[in-house]
Structures are given as C-alpha cells and as structure tokens.
Length: 464
Image (cartoon, rainbow, N blue to C red):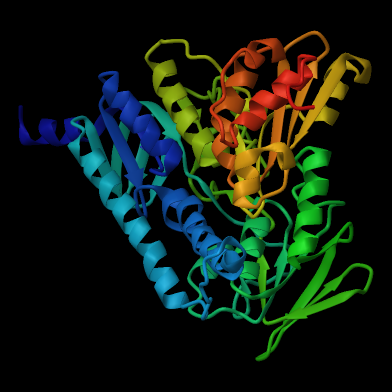
C-alpha cells in the first residue's frame, strides 16, 4: 500500500462519531465489539460533560455535603463529632481526584480497543459522509452526531463575575455566605442541597409552579416540604426579569417586582444542544431550536447520519446517552435493537432527600388510560426499618393500570436513588404488582419498601 493510500485508509472509518462524551464513547465501544472501525472526534476531553463538569463532580460535592450533615447530626447517634468547618480546597481536591481517576481509566479503555482512532480537534460535518477536523477530511460510512450540550442562560442575563453557571460553581475556591439559584430543576436542587449543607443561605427561584416540575405531584410536595424543613428557601410560580451585580453581590428581580439579594447567582435553567456552527444545517440535518430531529431509531433522515445524546430532544441524561450509543451501533450492525422510550428511562435527582423515578406519573397515567383506569399505592418510609436507622423520611409511590402492569415508580428519601434498578425493571418488563409481591426483599433494607408497596397494590399489605 502506498503512503498516500495508507494515509487515506486511516481517514476512513465504518463509523465516524462527532463527540466523545457519554453517548459518543459508548457508541465507539459497542461498535468495535461488533467489528467496526471507529473514528472518535473530540475537541476537549474524553468523557464530556458528565465526567468533567456534570454528573461525577456534582455527586462528589454531594457526598461531601452528606458527610457534613452527618457530622452535625452525629451526637443523636451517640457519636460525638464536631463539624469544625468546610475546607473547600480539600473538597475540590477530592472531587478533582475522582474525575482524574475516572478520566485515566476511560483513556486507557479507549486506547486498549483496537479499531478506535481518537481524533483530537474541533470537528465539523462537511458532507453526508465526511467530518473535517483541523483541515483534515475524515470519511465515515456512517456518521453519528454526539456533540453534547452546554449550560444555558436567559436573554439579557450575562454570565460573568458573580453570575455563574454550574461549571464555575463546581470550581469556586470559596463558600459563599448566600446564593440565589435560578432554576428549580435537577441541577438547581442538587446545588441548593450542597450549598445548604455547606452552610450557605440558599434561595431557589423557579418560574414554574413547583420545584422539579417533571416529577410526580406527590414527590414534588414531599421535596418542597423537606427543603422548607432544611431551611432552603424557594420562590415558585413567578418568572425572572433581571439581575444586576456589583462588588458585593447580585440583586435578582422577578416580573412581579419582588427582589432577592445574595453573594452569587447560579444560573441553572437547563442545558442547550451544542450544535451551532458544526455544519448540521448546511448538510440538511433537520433541526428545531438547535436540537437534531432524529426519528425513533435515531436516524436523521439524511444519508447514514444518526444523532444521539443531549442534542436529541428529550431527557438529557448520561445513561440515556450510553443507551442510545449502544442502540445506534447495534442498529448500524442490523441487530434491530429495542427502543426504550424516554418515559421508561430511570431518573435520579441527588439532592437530600434523593428523588428516583421511572415511568408514568399519576397524572401521566390518568391522561393516558383515564383516571378510572389507574390505581396508585404509596408506602411511607416511616414503616421501613433501614430508613428509620438512616434517619430519613420519604415514600415510594407505584402507579398501575387498573388490573394491569405497574407503569410508574416514584421514590423520595435518603439513598433511594439506589433502588431505581429494580424500579426500572418493574416498569420496563411490565410487571404486575402480584409478580413483584412474590419476590423476596432482604430485611432490613430500603429495598423492602418496593416489595411492601407492591404487596399493598396487589391487595395484600403485610404491614398495613
């Protein structure tokens, strides 16, 4: 093979992936298992938002926050520990160490896979089967768009100084005395939880009628009651109008004229798709407000181009990205993988108390089946031994189609995110309460609360 031919071969792949975050690298790993050659284009670091500025670092901070709360409450458990303060630089070092370890592991994993070529640089879709990186044209028989997302802001709200996004909040080298959080969704509630545990006076401003508005109404009420008890302030139902900052802090004004003041303002109004100036429109990719409109099987309708992860409308979750990456690799291989609808993808909000949910809310089920065809069952964690030991309150709520399967599981309480595994199996395998009721749940565990809820929903409650 001539030198030119060899160079050309190195620039041609079975699958060319634009973006190496959760969705992109999952595609690459599954694709090489299936015998494909892969070009993986990344302008920054393997792992993307989730590993470096999202899921992993925020959960590290949440663990530090949990330990702070444990120290404050330790005396009632007979352990006399005094919380002397939060060393934010050590917290950051701990967080950064977790990221560095996972990043090194991912780099090693990708490097060990024959068939994956990592292409460093900013890529741009240049035709239906090419991506151009640093002036070099790479060809893919199939192209997968996985360019990820960025922290959004609002019109007229300039990021900078004391007005920050989650990326900057993760790297603050001080603990603010007070903070306003604009947005009461997942990101906003998680940071509110961390900062409150660190001793910050926190206020959440959410324009919609409630915090975590995508959750079941019972879960929302429980979270808001828990946040009030923790001293986390929040304003809901009135939209943001403006923010002004000076050397001392930030003043936020709502459309009704109400104002809030704090040392910093965290803008947590969601994430937007990173698709601008990447050549998508020029190649004819169908778009809507920056999102790529792929079909149910994640094909864009253009050539052999697929789109996955945060750029596709729906839940912006790392594990959804993994699943879609695996799905697309198998779709290209002709394996006809099963579509998992967004509603049946598990969600966890890692604040204190944790929220975990999968499937239809009560409202969603009633809209789909009719209120008369829906049954619900709630189980209070006050009756669960392990939850009492941990000192947490909360509940499990199951939603079933009348005389049919369980279509939704919604939970709130410390550590309840760990129970989402069984919950998603129940919903995705369309289990009936009678099926789950036969399973043995170990005692004493929080996992028992799922069994107890199913027993009650099957009409044979053990402890009720």
